[in-house]
Image 1 (cartoon, rainbow, N blue to C red):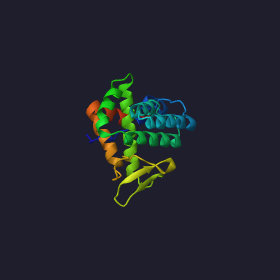
Image 2 (cartoon, rainbow, N blue to C red; image 1 turned 45 degrees about the vertical axis):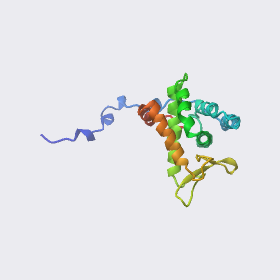
Image 3 (cartoon, rainbow, N blue to C red; image 1 turned 90 degrees about the vertical axis):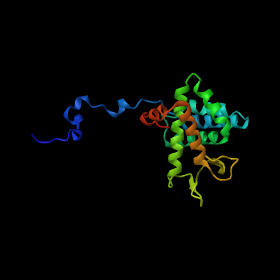
Image 4 (spheres, one colour; image 1 turned 60 degrees about the vertical axis):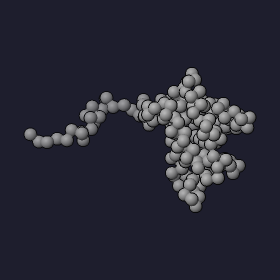
Length: 190
């Protein structure tokens, strides 16, 4: 009897009727326009100016632009990074507790985790427009008006990645590793 490596057999090729088309695996999302996201970003910045970081974060995470193009998603990422960098480390856990205990708590925390991973990916991509690498090797995300998002405004070390990692640690402490698995398996991208 010949030895067959059963792991190399493409079972979908044997029975194509049982294969899932990609459009069935990815949920349909309504289209999101740039003007909608600009309005949300403006609303979030006004909340930040009033000192309502939690409200700004809740508003930003409530409207992920799953159906938007890359420009829309980038603008919303900049808004979320700006909000995250404006929150002090001592305030992270209480804010996350309140977000998680809300009506859409688990979904909101999962959306936050998606933005954390997207922000980390942008930090590691040296050729991404809007991302600059300093002589120290630290990357920052620059947005409209010359402001830098993803860096703590009170710190001079340009610690954008450390802000994202701090948030990641707090989210995993609260929601567990299930949040990581849900984000990695969800086909909807932010």
